[in-house]
Every structure is written in C-alpha cells, then in structure tokens.
Image (cartoon, rainbow, N blue to C red; front, side, top):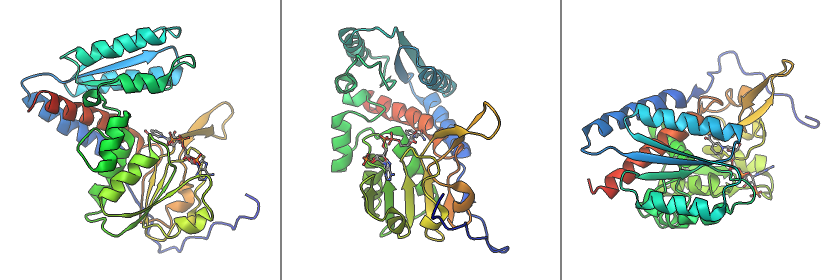
Amino acid sequence: MEGRAAPPQPERTRKLAEIIDGKAFAANLRAQIAAEVATLPYQPGLAVVLVGEDPASKVYVANKAKQTVEVGMASFEHKLPADTAQAELLALVRKLNDDPKVHGILVQLPLPKHLNADEVVAAISPEKDVDGLTVVNAGRLAAGLPGLVPCTPLGCILLLEDRIEDMTGLHAVVIGRSNLVGKPIAQLLLQKNCTVTMAHSKTKDLPGLCRSADILVAAVGRPEMVKGDWIKPGAVVIDVGINRVPSGVEGKTKLVGDVEFGWADKVAGMITPVPGGVGPMTIACLLRNTLTAAKRLENL
Ligand code: NDP
C-alpha cells in the first residue's frame, strides 16, 4: 500500500452505491428458463465433459448438473480419467455433436496438461457451443451476427441492461482482454453503443483511464486491484474477478473481487459484490444458452 492515499472518509450523508444483486437476478432468470422449458415439446439437454479430478472443476460441474436438472433440462455428465487420450476426448465430443438429445456441449476447462484444449473446443459444433468459445461464435459476436455468447460476459451485459436503460455514448472501460471474458464483454458493450476502451497489463495510467469510465468492468484476476479513487463518482462497476485470499482467520480463506469493494461502494453509483454479483450469472447464462441452442436446433 506504499504511496497510496488513505481512503477518503465518506461524508455521513453520502449514499452508498446500489448493490447489483446477481444472485437474485440469476434466480429469476433460472425461473424464467424453467417456465419456458416446461412449454417445449422436447427436453433441452446439456452435456458436460470433465476430464480428471481437479477439485474446483468437480464442484463447478456438480453445480451445473444440479441447476440444469432444476430448470427441467436433461443433464448428461461425462467424467473421464485424467489420462484420457486426445483422440478419445475428440471422439466423445463428435459423438455428442451427433446426439439429437444433446443441445449444448461444455468441456470443463482447464484440461490436464497433455491435452490440447484449443483442438477440443474447435471440435465442438458451433450450434452446440454453449460456452461460446469456438472461433465461429467469437467471429459471429465480432460481426454482430446471432451466435452463442460466452456465459460470464452475457451475464454482465444482462445485469447492465437491467440497470441502464440506454448505454448509448457511455464510456465503458474493460480491464482484461481474455477471449473468455474481456474481449466478449467489450464486443457486447460496443453493440450497446458504448464507447469502449480495453485495458490490459500494458495499459498506461490505468487509474486515470478508469476515472473516465461511466461503466467499469474489471476482469483481471488480481485481488482488489481497482481502488476506490480509480472510480468516477456515480459510475457503474461490474466486478468479474473471483480471487481467493486469506480471511484473517487462521486456515480460512474468503473470496474477493478485482475491485476494492469497501472503498468503491462509497464512490460508485452501482456495483456488483463478490460473491453474489457476476458469479451466479454464469451458470444461469449457460442454461440460457442451452435453451437458445435447443430452440435453434429444433427450429422452434
Ligand atoms: P486471464 O488471466 O485470462 O486475463 C486477465 C487479464 O487481465 C489479461 O488480459 C491481463 O492483461 C489483464 N491484467 C493482468 N494484470 C493486469 C494489471 N496489473 N493491470 C491491467 N490488466 C491486467 O483471466 P480471465 O479473463 O479468464 O478472468 C479474469 C477474472 O475473472 C479472474 O479473476 C477469474 O477468476 C474471473 N472469472 C470469473 C468468472 C465468473 O463466473 N464470475 C468466470 C471467468 C473468470 P494481458 O492480456 O496484458 O496479460
């Protein structure tokens, strides 16, 4: 913290930022999806492929399966051993591409090191690519064509759309340029007529740039990197970061975002908390993408 000014004391009368409750929004979205699924003459199906025993991935996959079934969709789990060969994994993906009961395919990343994730993702049919990671879907997003959009960016834009009626002309700064998060979020904001600036590790004067943002999206993976005095008063802050840090209690950890929430919420107009902001939107948007894919594949 050397060289850093102390957080300004908030005025007593100053209103704290409105908290964007992603957990409640995601629950509502899942309820809407379930209601629509109940009206369909077929059952949308999501296949999730897990290779190996990564504990975090196992938790994610179990949560995805549980929520898939809760909205009335079919869940097909494929758990493969850590030493699965590339050819075997590719063969499974191709089988799922051809299976009419499967409308969405997700291969849980990261894969064990001996496997080529790019080749596996490329093998997924773009029409079933509910993670939106194939080059075809990235290209469709960049070209403004209908496709399947990566789940976390889709979740961010749904939260923003819900809070900001018209984003036209707003300056959006996205910190992070990954294919999974930063780039697709920037594309979606551009579609909303924002003026978008993408920032990354080589950006000069990041604090100054952030201070010019009406919408600030942090997708970096660095605990509380974005300080309160980087935020323009009244800005809308979307914190995508999920970072596990020591909680202060021996042996316990806690989750924090990329934004220093305890200061930022005294400056921003609206802000997503971590946990409970963007995080819960990701699986809800996976289910939404599966529904979208199913409707397109079934021509309904
Ligand atoms: P990546 O590591 O792929 O990308 C991080 C980006 O942050 C890179 O573009 C990098 O720049 C940039 N960056 C790193 N350090 C700095 C810095 N000091 N200043 C400015 N930019 C910097 O991460 P992801 O995009 O996959 O994920 C980002 C965060 O979002 C993580 O915390 C992750 O856990 C979280 N996440 C949350 C999800 C959710 O469901 N809420 C889903 C997916 C991710 P450069 O390109 O120059 O290296």
